[in-house]
Amino acid sequence: MKIDIASETWSAVRKFCEKHIGLQTEIVLQPGRQPHEYDTARGEISAYRAVLALSAPMNVEPSGDYSKRTDRSGI
Image 1 (cartoon, rainbow, N blue to C red):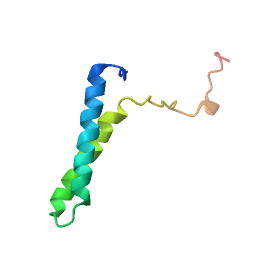
Image 2 (cartoon, rainbow, N blue to C red):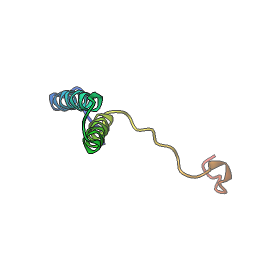
Image 3 (cartoon, rainbow, N blue to C red):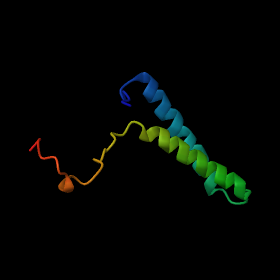
Image 4 (cartoon, rainbow, N blue to C red):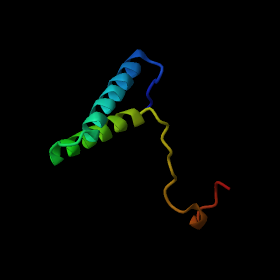
């Protein structure tokens, strides 16, 4: 999937995610909370980062070991 990182929509999504990553980071850094609150905040940070990672180009690795191919017709 290709994302147009120059679009207004992506800009809004990026700003939303960055804002909420900051808010959840503040929660993680505050002492005295319940363990499940920290876990929830870390999970949300991870989810927002996953959304932001959608704009990164995907590195596709070829499957299989090409050195062991028996079909040499393309060489």
